[in-house]
Image 1: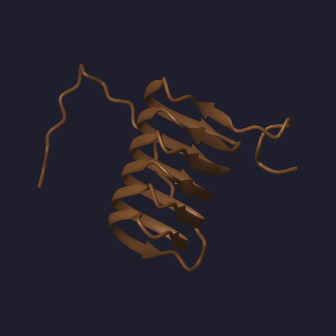
Image 2 (image 1 turned 90 degrees about the horizontal axis):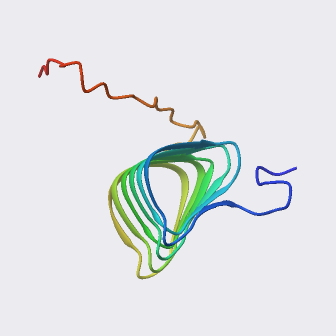
Length: 133
């Protein structure tokens, strides 16, 4: 069985939906709305034309028609459609870019196929953190 749900559908964030926070999933995801936060999935991420993500993305494959701003870690293949816009830092296995896509990012190819891991950090407004250089 693939990483998607039993009925073959993606978990979805619809166009009229805005999410602020972190999403962790074992299955495939489709974003048509707005996410301000992070996504971590072992499945495929699809960002529709109206989809926008601001934050950190970690997935096995990604198919992007919308916009991503931030860090993007794709273990296997990142496919950018003509309407896509990527800004930030990208670590990928393979890259497919259609004519018309906007790609303003630093990009590294990960030959070993390792998935970059990140930790979800909870901010505690009660604690003051000292910043060092």
